[in-house]
Length: 259
Image (cartoon, rainbow, N blue to C red; front, side):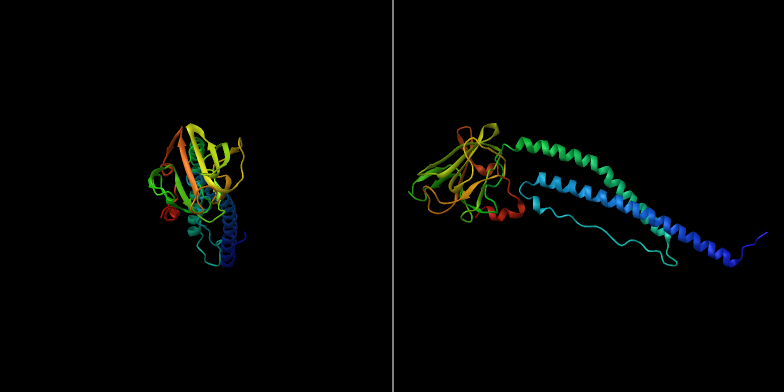
């Protein structure tokens, strides 16, 4: 019978280690490919949820990248330790995979909720930023000097800045008069309407359907004004109400909204 020498045994152990390493690497590459796909899917879902929950701040979402080096197996490398890491990776993959369905369900619920809110004027009406110079309520008229009820907010930003529809709806009026100057009135759900006055340019027309966040004109100084600004009103039925009761102000930009 053929007897194995000590050298043969050593060679067999080395061959076995190479085979084990190759099997591990194949398994590792396969799970890494699946993990990266799942990680990207999860990142997209989280980004979508962030955008839905933070209207107007879609570009503020920053994800944290994860990664690392592919393990190498030099002489004496400990495969058992690497196998543990592989199992940990498989466990994380399973967690991500199992989180997808609940996350998609949450996104669907938020999307449905947002559809209900589309008709409520909750967006900031100036693209970029801007700030409030004149609040809603009792004020001294800046031109005539008497007390009166200011029916909206006066907002200041760069001349020609884009004016955004604060809710989805339909344009009810595009008009010019000596007080409001160029102005747009948009009707929304639930009895709401919004008015945007003293515009420089108007990009919409009566009867046009408008989506929340759509550009409707530019900031100007038409009508009775002391300087360029947007006069913005929210009405519920025939009653003017304080727009700040509805506006969402992203925390990262809150300081820019009121002075």
